[in-house]
Image 1 (cartoon, protein in one colour):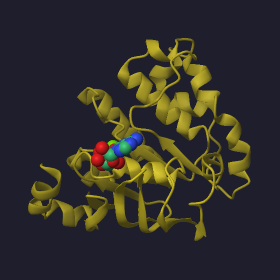
Image 2: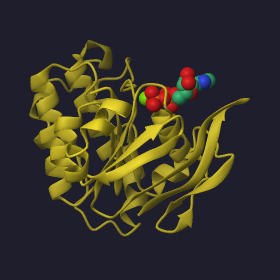
Image 3: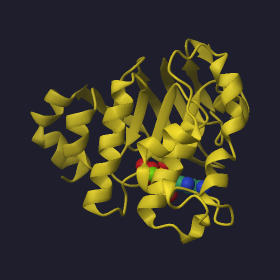
Amino acid sequence: MLRIEALEAGYGDSQVLFGMNFEVGVGEVVTLLGRNGMGKTTTVRTIMGIVRAQKGGIFLDNEPIHELPSFRIAQRGIGLVPEGRQIFPNLTARENLIATANRAASNRSNGGSAAEWTLDRVLDLFPPLAERLRSMGNQLSGGEQQMLAIGRALMTNPRLLILDEATEGLAPLVRAEIWRVLERLKAEHLSILVIDKNVEALTRIADRHYVVERGCVVWAGSSEELKAAPEVQRQYLGV
Ligand SMILES: Nc1ncnc2c1ncn2[C@@H]1O[C@H](COP(=O)(O)OP(=O)(O)O)[C@@H](O)[C@H]1O
Ligand SMILES: [Mg+2]
């Protein structure tokens, strides 16, 4: 579904991605692992068209998307839960959820077979949000903001959901809640790209993993292979 090919990108003169390669298949849950500063968020920003690819390509259903503007990439069916959540602080939780939802119509015509995401379905996935709909974004707890960020991405009816450090800084119980939701989305055959530090949870949920070091993939394998490779975890992840 998504294929990243020999991708190079960066900020001004400072190159961050040096030939990044990986794939996410339909219905797969795939991770990008690696220490801070290795280029995972830059990869995500390049996929979303926020940072421009300098070389290489990004293909969605075999079609190049690396020259499209961000809103078109979102319309093609990629939903991002960005690092740091980026909730609109002065909108209510409800407004945060529906702010981007009008993209749904174009995504649906894009051949998505899954049921359409609605406010009710998001609240069913995250019951605590139901009582907070009238609260402003900046009044929500970290966990509530994260649920809101995931709900907001789902409201665009993505076929591929990207989560960048979605459990960072959250209490263990809230974190577990996020993992539960990912498992549920996986069961609904959503394709998911996850960036996170919790290798143990990820080996339980994800199908395949890519380890990123200085802007390129240095190791790839299944959850079984990653569990059986403590030296990979030590060398590249500091686990
Ligand atoms: N907006 C920016 N401008 C310049 N350099 C940046 C910017 N964002 C990130 N970088 C640099 O790019 C490198 C990769 O960062 P990032 O993609 O955020 O890594 P990761 O998500 O793996 O922690 C780091 O050296 C970081 O300092
Ligand atoms: Mg990052």
